[in-house]
Length: 301
Image (cartoon, rainbow, N blue to C red; front, side):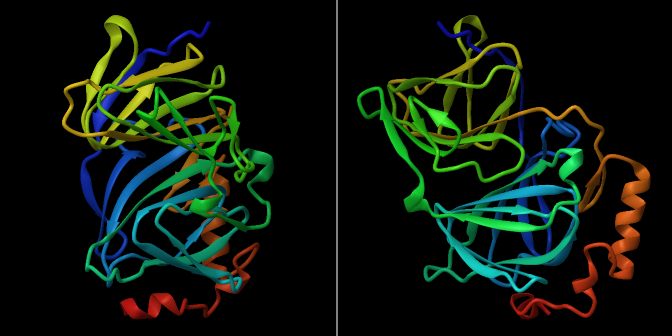
């Protein structure tokens, strides 16, 4: 017998400018929700050719990028480069320091590239680890169906209905489930006890919660669940006009202080100052940043 989690808060992710010409709906990392450990930021981005996220540094955390439509090129100062396409993910660990560029490819139909990027904090002992990348291709992701085919779940990371994800791709334990529910469908998803969890809605309307605490939520909303409980209930009304589509995410909270200045996330103010100095002086992980410019970023200058 599972204990359903209640909804703690719901709010709209308001669209704003970010990077160069890109538009994002940011839900974590805003006044509505500064952080939800281990999560530091969630952006739902829309980017056209000529826009994107050119050369920029990071230190102290991981990013998880999930492409919903189109394709994104990436390149860093260590010589790593590649492309992720619709349905693919990239897990990037900044660790002690990395400088990279993320630029959308032109889509044949002229449509923008759309995706999600989640920032995940690193445990203090891993903040100085070496940078690394792991790509997860759409075809590698296990899929399940529930409620007689009315519910479809991509098990990107974690477990659902007895099916495990391919592997753990982030240092900090996280679950990521891409869920679609047709009208009349319902599902209960178990979650690890005491982990923080939220859902970000992409399309349609979905009813979250159980009993009197149920709320029906439209697109572009962040639904934050209370920590108490070990499951989340979700359904779409029989008379709904569209499938409900959302991402359910949970993570192990980290018992540590978060001090952030832009792309640097550490545990003390002194460490943030040191990160800024290291980047400016090309030291302690940023040696290769000196004189480096990405090839894919040149198209934006």
